[in-house]
Image (tube, rainbow, N blue to C red):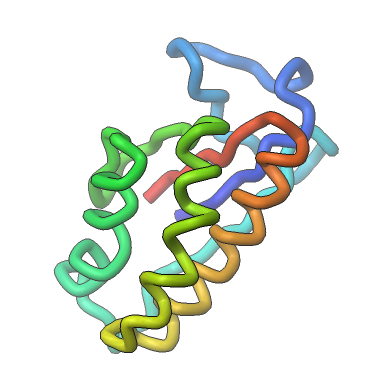
Length: 120
């Protein structure tokens, strides 16, 4: 799984529309964070605490095993929403950290006027 902050959209390749091909950290076109679910977190809990809320907020076609691009508008929505969502206290510590990284990437994407790819 990964988050990829799009740094230079014109330097990435695209096969299927607006979502760049899996950006690798071999060039400076994207900053990529790879992650795996911790053993103590089920796929169901991951979906309930992270995937479903993000997909709903961002109107993304995102499910476990999917990929989507969170565009500038979605990133702006995340910036306003993530701190409130983290504050509710019902998230695993690992999910809170993941939201923190997504927030960082969303803030940078808004400044760069790009987006963030999520591949689960």
